[in-house]
Every structure is written in structure tokens, then in C-alpha cells.
Amino acid sequence: MTDATIISKIWNLANVMRDDGVGYGDYLEQITYLLFLKMIDELNKPPYSKKLHLPRLKDVAGKEIPKGEVCNWQNLTNKNGAELEAFYTQLLRTLSTEKGMLGQIYVKSQNKIQDPAKLQRVISMIEKENWMLLGADVKGRIYEGLLEKNAEDVKSGAGQYFTPRALIKTMVKCIQPKPLRTIADPSCGSGGFFLAAYDWITENNKLDKDEKEFLKNQTFHGNEIVASTRRMCLMNLYLHGIGEIDKEPLIDSGDALISEPKQTYHYVLANPPFGKKSSITITNEEGELEQEDLSYNRQDFWETTSNKQLNFLQHIKTLLSIDGEAAVVLPDNVLFEGGAGEEIRKQLLKTTELHTILRLPTGIFYAQGVKANVLFFKNKRGGKENATKELWIYDYRTNVHHTLKKKPLTEADLDDFVKCYNASNIYKRKETWSDSNSDGRWRKFSYDDILARDKTSLDIFWIKDKSLTDLDNLPDPDVLALEIIDNIESGLGNFRQLLDDLKDMEAN
Image (cartoon, rainbow, N blue to C red; front, side, top):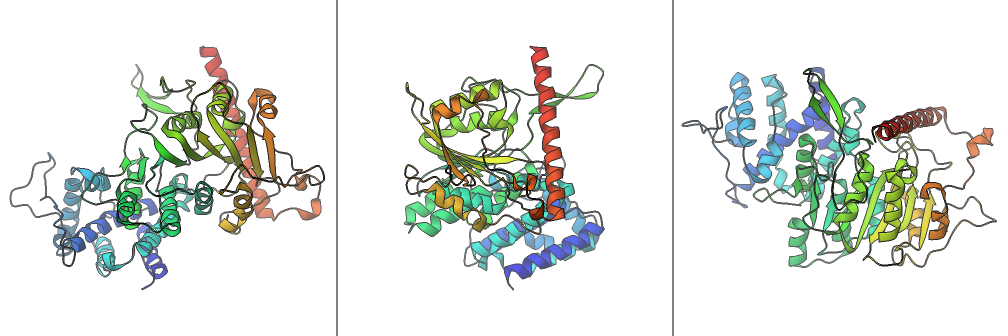
């Protein structure tokens, strides 16, 4: 059975489950729980004979039940009806208390399939495949396919954890990570950057035994605070051959922004959460729940702010080793916002070599109203001179139209940017913009050019918008409609940020 057939089969059952009130995200979680258990069962049998330990059932207090059954696949498949539902619920609760990757996969797990007959169908579907015999590339494609389908479910909000794979692969092509180097993502979502980097390293290098072991267990380091997303990331990595069931997970559950990093890394690839404000929920004196802005008071940050993306940008700078490289997706407000934003940009230009910005079009993210860019920079040792000498900008936004379904972003769409980026030697680049070619998308700006701009704004564009002058070449109506929605939502977001800034000024 091909991976496409398996994806279709699994997702057809998801539609049946949805009719019973089980959402796509909940269904994908149950698939993860069951698939992980099935693979442990396969690994404990010949030819692997791993002897991976699974606990006996525990009660609500976390104590092992006398003569309780082992939480394994065989005991699960031997049951049906109400007995199956009860055993599965107890199994999930028990495994959630385990340590290491096992515990992280099942943390906060719950049975969302209340109909035992439907649960039996899912189990039977997974039972029919020998998952360990499938290649890592096949298992990976199957799970990635499920993650992408889940991201398409707008109501679930899962799309915020899923960066377009064409964009991720393009960023990795530019960075070109090398073997025996570490890679971090402080907001790793479902692990897309790690997988693309893994593929790049394996496809472009002939790895020896030590390099393969390092790639499997030591290269990748991430943070993801949402338990359901973290478990999907761990599963995604494991299915692609990254990490071990009986070792500590590669993805930390803590808030990456809370404290200074314990180590630095050679590369950071990231797409931090889109929301501008960091906040926590507290109970006021009247017993009501309120949202309170959260600012991270870190000595290693240039500025204290509640703007989440600005904090992630500062944090990513601290994650990089000297000469470490970063490629980070960030929204427009990071490029032009005043106050803390201006000071952070100045410090970024001074302490890192911010050499490239890729302006992204709307219509490529599952979250609407997002106008984003990719910033590429290298960390440099402190010195008297500014590390950034010149900044190259590629405008792939103006007069570019994409939609998620009819015209999704592809790697081929960004081939020209990759060519202009010239990863083999970023100091030998050629502009495509000139006085005679004002529509050239690739243009260079000096440090003095940027410093002279109001608020040291990096929100730079120069190509004329043809939709404002050429009515005969307007994009399709559905593209126009989506762009209008994106512009309205982006404008509302900027207005809310302005209100927040005014409140901060009044408070100070």
C-alpha cells in the first residue's frame, strides 16, 4: 500500500469520526497515541528485540494496580466494547506519568473516541500495517500528510503551528546546514524546520557513523509549550528517524523566552508565533479571569517589551554561537515598529550581520492577515564597528498572488530568490534592480541608507503595485478577496498594536 493510499485511508476515517464530534486535531492525537504504542510493540519483537519497558496500569493516584495489565499493544487489541474503552483510558493516564519521550508523547492525553466500535476501527487500521518495515521517508510522508490536512482545518487553529514546507525548504537551501553542527528552533511547532534540515544534510553529504549518530540524537534542539503540538513534533521527528523512544526528548516543554539559554547553537531556523502580545491569565480580587501583558525581564535582552516577536528575535540572537546563522520568519511590525522595536533593530544591525530580507506575499499561511518576512543574519563578536555593512532585500510580495488551495506557494516560486541569495558566496551578489529596471526584485542597501530611514525602518519596498494602475491585469476575484481580508486583518492588528503602545506609554 502506498503512503498516499494510507494517508487517504486514515483521513477517510477522520471524516467518519468528525461526524461523531471528534475534531481533526483530536483524531490526529489518538492516531499518535496508538501508532506510537504499535511501534513499541514491533520494536520489542524480533528482529529488533529492543526490550522497551512499558508500565502496568496505575490508578488515579498514580499507584500501580495489583495484577494490573501491562500497557501494551497486545493487551489493547485483545479487548472490545466497554472493556476496550476503559482499558484505553487507563492506559493513556498511566503512560502520561512516565519519564522521557514516552511521557512527553502521552502527557495530558485523553481518550476522545467515546464510541468503542469507532476506537476498534482505528486500532484495526493501525494493526494491519507493520510500521517499522516502512522506510523512515514513507512513515514521515504519511504523518506529514496528516499534519498538513489538520492544518487546513481553519476552525482548529492548527495552521499556526504549520509553516508552508516550500518556504521552510527554501530557507534551509539558503542556510545549507552542515553535519556535526547543532540546530535550534525555540518555537518548533510540528518540527518542519528540523525535518527539512535533516533532509538537506543527508541528501548533500556522505555521512559516516559518528555523523549519523550525531544527526539522530544531538543535532536538533527545540521548544514547544503546547503539549498537543509538542507530541506531534516528537512523533513527526521519530517517524523520520530522529530521536529514540528510550532517551530524553529533543523538544523541551518550557517557555523558551523565560530565561537565558544554557547553550548556544550553530543554526537557528524558526517561525515564532504570530501574536504580538505575550500574556498570562490571572484571577483578580473579584475572582474574575483577566489577561495581563507579560514582559520578559532578561538581562541579556536589549529591550524589555511585551511584543512576542521582538522578544523571540532577541532570544534567537542569544541562541547563536559566534558566526552562528539564523533564518527567521517575522511579521512586518518587527521591521517598522518604534520604541523598543527601533532600538532592537539598531542593536541587531550592530551586533549581527543582517545580510538578507525576503519579503513574503500574503496568502501562503493558514493564519490570515499575516504580512511576513524572512530575516537572515549571522552572529558576530562585539566590536567598535557595526557588523552589518549592507542589506539585500528580495521583494517577493509586490504583484505576487498566492492562495492556499488554487495557487499555493511552491519551491519553484522561490528559485529566483535562492539564485540571487547565492549561498556559496553571499558577498558576490548582483542586483536585478537598476534605474533602467525598476521592477527588479533584488536590491542592495547600505548601512547608512538604513540608518537614515525613519525609526531605522527595514520595511523597504520600491516596485510599483500594478493592481493600482493596470486594471486589465487584476488577479482572480478569489485572490483579490483574500488579499482584501489579509489587508483588513493586518490593518486591525497594527491598530491594536498602536492602542497597546499608547496604553504602555500612559502606564509609564
